[in-house]
Image (cartoon, rainbow, N blue to C red; front, side, top):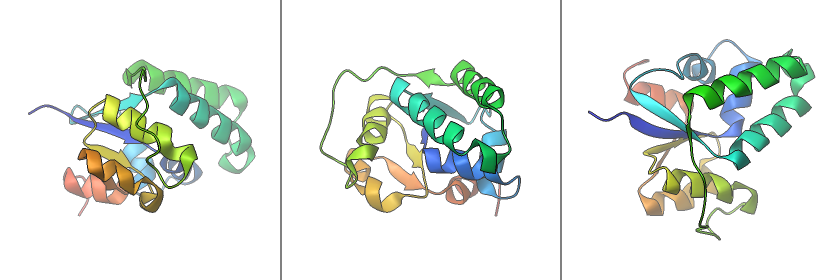
Length: 142
């Protein structure tokens, strides 16, 4: 079976770094799992960087910690270039790039807490799941 293709929304990244309890942290700790492949774009990495650096004090991370985390994600993720735009899709235009990335990478899932604004991704056959729902689907948690 081919690994699932996934896109992880920034809100999941923040939640996973904020607390070592819960599904977001577990998902981040398992990013190298062979059952799925994480997909990123330049826009998503820049968003991760911007938000994580802004929230660094509440996350207990230094700028160096964040740079190393992002380098690690880039080392294991499929890097996708977006040459076309499906816009407008998401109800929040700031989230359109996630739909673009998911379509380009033929992702099965967008892992997010923001299903409402990304609902348009479902028109492309992309399923929106919370971290807990995704880990339940792959049998990691009940």
